[in-house]
Image 1: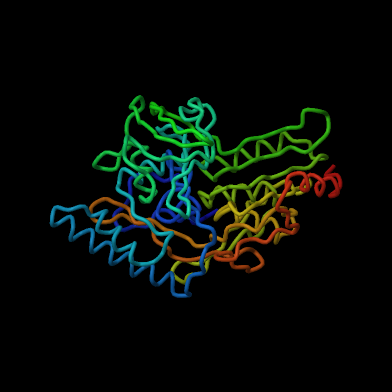
Image 2: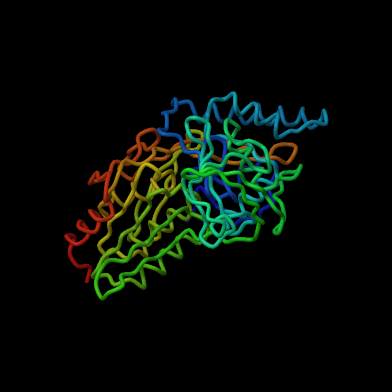
Length: 399
């Protein structure tokens, strides 16, 4: 199966070549969400629609960014910074520029390993930086940092009002070439939570992301719940193993709430777990139409309910939209984020990497997702999982 995203290729980037294509829920407003170590989860309240010429504009922005980076490098300045200024002026909040080291780290994140403190953050409307996710067992979790805590400063430098990418870079301990700090290095955080302010020094360590978790019923009956937080390498295979171990008579809950997206190939691989072939999505790259298909080896017997919410983004929307359009699952929860644009990276003359919008995708029924999201079959704002279990119980046996 050919697809728009392949991180199985060697990490070395061919100059001028677009190696990978993202539906970058993991790239929000110029920062990686969740897949970078201590990344900035900066999804905004609603995605705005893009003009039809967005892909053409993306190509023009790429050319301008490459020229700016080349000129800056020739002048002994930062090519990445010059390119970032061009991208910022383009008005596309999904496009961004990485130093070479940052992009290498980003690829490592999608492979499931990173050095950090196990902390994800997002920027609020008032400029405050808050914790959006804490990795169980990581330094941040052991220090008692919780979702919702406000991050006021990193190593004494205030976080409020600063670009979230800057806060992320400080958490990672970026060096001059964009490479993160080594395991064992300290970082001091000033935080506020509840009614207290406190400071803590954490030591970065090598961590592995766990993007798929499986909850099986304690008793003899009840559905298995599979939670996917992001589509990193190996996600599809992990879901397939979980489905094979589940009892098809009890059905499955596929929980995509808060899923920030990731590798499109892994979203398609996950769709292939539940579909017997056929269309998963269509997409365009600079106006050229393409399609993604399931591999035809899926389990179509097991009853399936998909849980979504406003934090379900990008590749997670591709998956939920495909299962909904194909009549394979009932989608329950709140309308999704609406991130349906596609980013493609290319190396700039100084070795930095520009991620720019090149197109958009549609569900198998031809629905555009960008700016619209996926509307659940059953809209539930509160106690969505309880309602999903009720729905699942009425879908009948898969035996």
